[in-house]
Image (cartoon, rainbow over all chains, first blue to last red; front, side, top):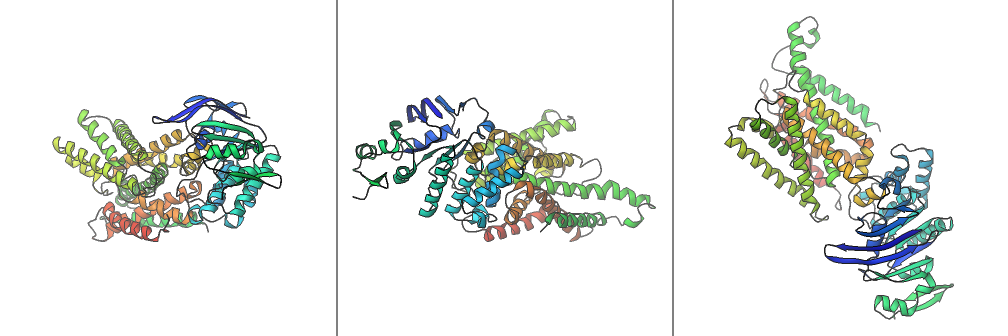
Length: 251
Length: 317
């Protein structure tokens, strides 16, 4: 479980998060939703210690992120931030292999290599394994970064808008993969913009707005017409499709 | 493809060539019978050859590291304020304590180089990430400002001669046995970097990925800063700054091999050694028995190579 207690955050003088206390349940796929500027990414980045924690306390599977050494945390959670234009010239296979680095610290064994091969296969990257990162498309690079996080093979996986740049088939493939991992006992937290991916795949939803948590709970309890219309300040209809909520926004 | 053995052989061949060229006419096959030839070989030719190879290798590795630290391919240890910092340190210790021992000068040069390179890192941290070209421009401006401070102080204290040997294009004609050994320190520092090659490669992927993989980015940055500064300070102290090696060689190797530094750093070192050896040799041959500085040859060749690299670069790079 990820516990967040009394977390506030500001960037410069602008308050981003106001005294947030919430939990991401163990063994579930949790989606963070909300309008732009709600603080979802900031919260995820704070959990993943990509930003220094200013106030409050966060524990990941019992590890206080403020006091646990960062290399120890890397064996408990993998975090994938939003990709910026970093022009590193690694082959995709080498990038994914670095996902094992927290475990072997430079001396990969056969088990590490097997996990890397598995991750490359899972994201259809095997044919591209020897291409350079700066010579593949944005979506392919994104998949390679996700594969690296998967190869890290941690109890928790945190993803900041992982569906960016992915086409429909690969987006669905990723969600199916994450679902499978969760069913095998792992836990996933992700920021999702396209709300129907949350509706179709998430167990638990945390809805944020203006730096506060406005609702949290099982997906079908949170994704209701009134709540979503308030959340996004726009009229939204929610239907049903195959027993899951389906959010309709083209009306 | 195994580039290492082929490159190793080329470096050896160039070193042999370097041993046979010089103003004194000696027969290398007769060194064991001719004591004069032995003297020239051991006191002048060999030290010079080793100095050239070490300089090229160490500066190229330093180039890879500074490029990983700033995540920009258009900088080198000669355009990030490092060389000027080393000169500033040397100048300061020369003024404050003219009779200071060598080790103290070494430390002063390294520490000052570290300080100015850290300043460069602090400056570029505030630049927008997407403006790729601002980083090298900031480096050039900082180098220029520091260089003029050094020149001003050198002028005021009548030490321009020293300043010239440090910052003007470097050359190896003054290298004799006993006056180049600091370069081994540079080479050892560069070799130590290889043991952290993975860490530098991960650092090059950005702060987010590095932190996510549990890397203490600050520690790796400090290590890189130390290696770059020590290498540059030793080179500046011994032979003066050699331009372009630290910029061109990392780019050349990354184009072909990518940024998996554990595999590519040895190649970078050998290519750097070969390039500077070739330039030094060319400088000694074109107007024999006189020479032009290796730094000058590199200035011309390096600029051409870099222009070629810029144009061959994929559009989105």
